[in-house]
Length: 393
Image (cartoon, rainbow, N blue to C red; front, side, top):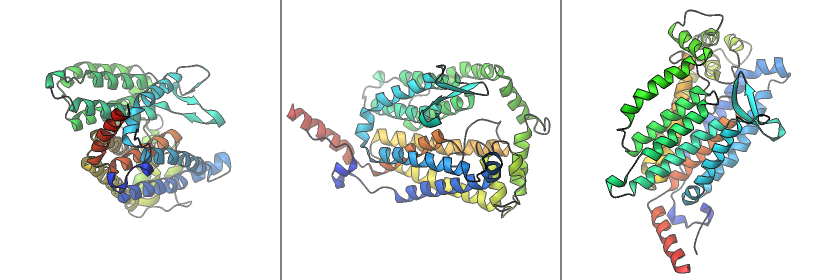
């Protein structure tokens, strides 16, 4: 029986070369992220931990772990990823459920979004839920596309899966991530050409449900009020947003540099996390902001190109979902920092401090690299494998 697990064991003719331009974008974004983290967190890290490289070292450890996931998803055959997908999805569901188990769950500010790991590390399962949902929907839409009779097609399992994952994350008191996951799922519905006749009637339930969810937590109401009235509550729940805007405006064209000239960065609470873009803008100015968006655009362009030219339908759908997730999350974070959206807890990919975020981001990037190599021969080889397996039996 002929079967290959890694690309190294597969005939060279069955795959194109990896998209080197996309890999370069990933490397440059990681490098910019580490540099931005040092610039924004050095003073705070020096005051709190006596080491200006404290957060940088933590992020480098996370990136080292992330590279394992990157090379894994970039190397394993797409067919194998599809075969182990049920295990991956089940594993992520278990991780999400562990956030409700006392002793394992870690509670911060009333939210239980993390679980304890060995060596004093914590893990945020909702980040992994994004990737698992993308793979699940890609596999489902791929199977639906193979059904010839339109009457036999149904999007109900996809809708149930999308809603279930979103609610599971919401019950961890992670409202913004649950809404983000639902939006990424909708984008995959559009990209796959699946029927959306269920969406208009569903909105009659979704919109009131969103309003109800917002009203359940005082801090969510405060964020909406702060967004609608940015000139008020400057010393309370609008403080972080106003400090971020001042940091961005003070950067000018060339920025304030990376030394002691940075003023507003030090006034942004937890600048190394969700508001790191404001610190980057103050330090590097309009030039740095433009550089970031150019790199993000190049990342999105090369990633989408990989999904469009990929002849393996599952890989194409999943690759599109990964690119959409990273790009949309980046734009949403920048919009929040600039005051164009209400405050959320969504980090900036490649930049914000967070092990779970960078691990999932690089795993998705590894999958995109894998998809960039797929050709039409992939499906043919899978068919040939089935034939050989039949003969062996």
